Image (cartoon, rainbow, N blue to C red):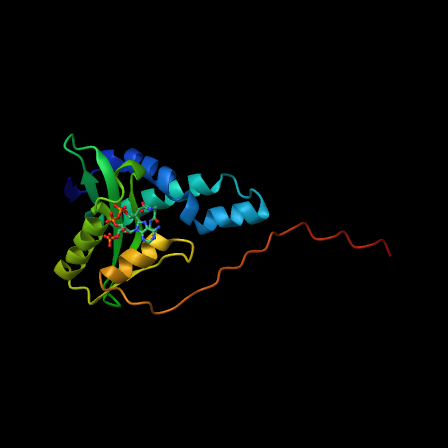
Length: 165
Ligand SMILES: CC(C)(COP(=O)(O)OP(=O)(O)OC[C@H]1O[C@@H](n2cnc3c(N)ncnc32)[C@H](O)[C@@H]1OP(=O)(O)O)[C@@H](O)C(=O)NCCC(=O)NCCS
């Protein structure tokens, strides 16, 4: 396994890994399960757009783990926030067939190295209560919990027609 910089031709494969992995750890999917489908596309399509946006906004901060044939097997995306000195990690995923081999940890370490190289002072990442791996992996790298957030959603039904007066 090697970790290299993202190339535009990786995007479809990164999106494939995203679709394979994010179902159990997606707020958007939780909403869809609770409220039913909404919007012009489902949670998965929206998540794939989010990964494409990560790659567009900070392509020099997307690191890709590849196998011996240079096929992506995992990735981490990052965002530099120089105004605050925070390096943010919006997304991280490893192909289920390759999980549990230290690839996620190595990708996070690469992201932290990138933040140091670029003068960031703090690294930030979020995880869901329903994600036990994140809650184990991030503290094991030195991340400390700073807050918990509760997400609410409301299905907007058409307003009732007022009675004739
Ligand atoms: C999170 C993810 C990237 C980790 O990738 P990975 O390559 O398997 O990670 P690693 O092998 O480096 O480490 C996984 C760690 O979690 C631990 N782990 C695995 N299953 C676990 C579980 N159910 N509960 C707690 N810890 C668990 C492993 O033991 C390992 O810890 P260790 O290094 O101390 O032994 C991968 O699970 C994934 O793609 N998940 C779906 C997407 C996701 O959750 N992304 C992060 C959003 S916050």
